[in-house]
Image 1: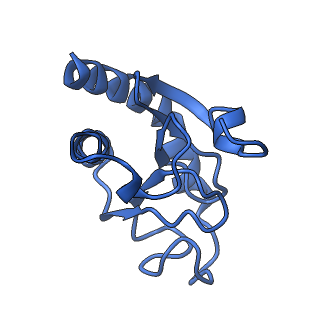
Image 2: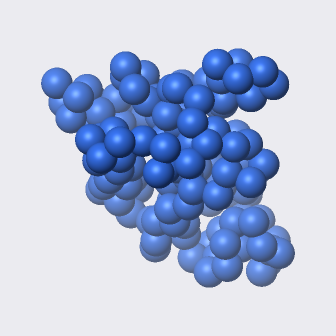
Length: 144
């Protein structure tokens, strides 16, 4: 654990699943209800800090999250990112994107393209408990 690292000190969002090496959380990002992160449990700053087996394990988890999002909520696109500029603790963003979201097709960190569609966001938010359950099931099968 590294001092003052928010991903060492806490889960970093709503915990969906935890394995020995990594966890999956749903982030609380305004305007983007289906914004997930795959967080490496040990404090490492860069993907290249992991050995080959750990890198494969991490990306397999990212793939499972992406596949479940695609299958169950049918986004227009999935965005993957591992920036780490604000929190230098290895984590991958897995973000379901929709044509109606306020920033689409720009990145979620860019300027908005239109007003938020609260009705669409709320409808998606209502589906998140079932989505989280599907993620837990898929990750448990993958980890077994």
